[in-house]
Image (cartoon, rainbow, N blue to C red; front, side, top):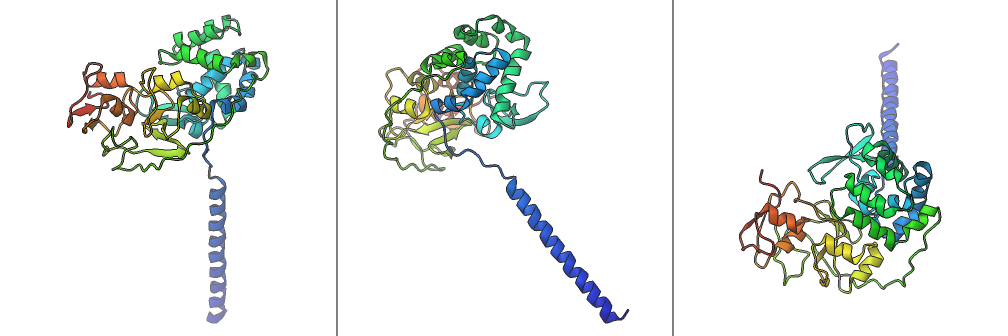
Length: 348
């Protein structure tokens, strides 16, 4: 074979190899594109959540005997109506942690402790099924199945007594949700009547800029923090300390928030350490779920600015007001001085 012929063959194979590499690259790119997951971008209200997942609760009731009302009440409470981080990113609607016997997928999430292990599911249905199996498979919940399915108060109190949740008001929260949304109708295998309300016009949006130098509180009440960051992931809902919250807009009332997010006034008051006579103010942060016992792991303390109160600091960092007092050895009602360090986590 001549040198010229050999060069032609080498050139031909080089072209083929180059084209093969290009085709392989395009194929892999397409595969990657197909596997990209799309996160939920809209928040659901409590009634919307109940309407969407009531069939799963009824299905599990028929399979295991757990009242559908209890399953639904736990789901809306634990998942924040399906809007919580665990629900959106892991399909975990019941806040079930990994425990020793879990062999499935996992996700790390800050709860009572930093970076705790929670179960991750392929679907919401898997989460509902595992919740039922979790209750039926644990000895400490055995006494619940001796109760009548219609005894939702007994089930609620029994879950709290057995240690399902640490919130001292857990049983009361479940009972209130069941009563407010007629969830006992699902225990008979039928749909509960929807609560119809005339839609309220959306108030004009308030321009809110959140960065390292600007606060989401009203200027007259708060001086801008330096370590305050907010992640708005689902419309009006943002996150602080991995807790869902909204910014109060002009025109917002407890009643309008109930209609929009499905959370009762007494729940919002409790979640946000507010007095029963409190009135919402434009620019306030209002949490849609209970605050935590301590702040985010990356922020150890808060340096008090002029006019800041313990309540304002607790809202900025998503910490229960009572726990904030405890962390700093302060009496309830005592206020900090400008320049004082307020610890957000245990010093130990």
